[in-house]
Length: 411
Length: 141
Image (cartoon, rainbow over all chains, first blue to last red; front, side):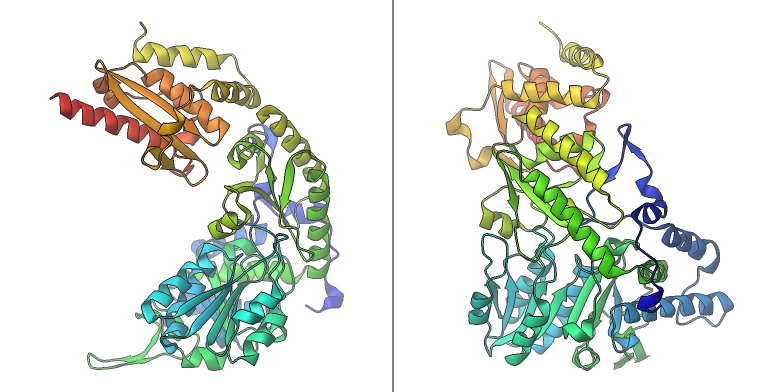
């Protein structure tokens, strides 16, 4: 669908398509502000899941029978839908994974095999544990060095420090597109230029960006881009690793098994071509097909309007929270979206989260799988409200009143 | 002196008057503020139970055949629930602590706080209370 034919963005109509939003929690209308953790699913995705298991269920890529071919066609169609959505050059560059974590682990293992002792990997201080631990494991395995580019108190990457850490030994820069805890948008396109200038590759963790903005992996010029399906209105257990074809070709397979092979003898095995080389075993077929449906759904939306709306919603919430005495916003980057994290003096985030829950409001509390980031801010955790395009200003108003009530109870 | 079961029934009775979740939590928060705190010098790492969400410190001893618990937590709601658990288990023999079925938690609607997914340290705390009781059973045997 071209830009001109996008549907106008009307929140009321969008909400209608997400049945999970129409429920009472503790007799209150659900307010779902935990979109950073996972998103709700539109009816088209739910219908597709039902349809797949009621009608099309068959194993793909190998069967000669009708149902297998039908399932294969749908699965491969989903791959192309996703390719088009992120503007990848070829569908072979779209590898189905279990999620963003799985994608990062795949790269850490497989691209990691191309690295040797003394090489360096550069990450940032705002990474999710998923974009820290696989690199630590790789560094131990191959005797590499992990470098961490620091951030400032606003939660922005300090570019000068990043530049200092980047050198000819750096083989990979692994950076989050948007911080799940702070909402900071990293300048990934600029970082890609810098990485390539020293001969390094760049992996962008898109777990928190794919659902909030248009993604163009060619324009971004990233070498790898990973995301999880469930955060982008699709099912759990499915995700995508995008990789540049030439690079994926050079990398050895991650896991061995069915589907990833071309020919097996007991003496020697030759591997299948991309993308199947990296997809051992029966994949999450329903997940792949339904993730394709989620992207078809997103393709009809004007993502620039979505991004603008979500940013305004987060800013509205942040401005109101900012007026509370003793409340501090964690993450005040100039370029920020969709996430508002905060702490309140002498009140534990868990207590606020529990009281919000009892008022029908779902938020996340804790360290958000970013413990080093919590250490940096010297806090035990935050309360995080993370928004999606189906959230409304009215919900923010109720949330603000509920936060105020909770603080008063806990003081 | 009340039995362990009578103490549970008493708490269930107290919670029956609340028909609103927020009132219930207001009461738990008040209990949290009243929790007899663990001595500062006992807030050591070996008494710390790390949860994903909040941390709990627990000191468990046996005096004259009865178990004594003091505790602290960094979250007030956690403290309130600890207050209830200690009220039920304090001054009980190791045997009855080890055997205790803490059904009141479910009846008053707080079972989510003792589910493994909550990871607020409470489930581990109850396990530690029971473990200490069991160890003392063995010592007496």
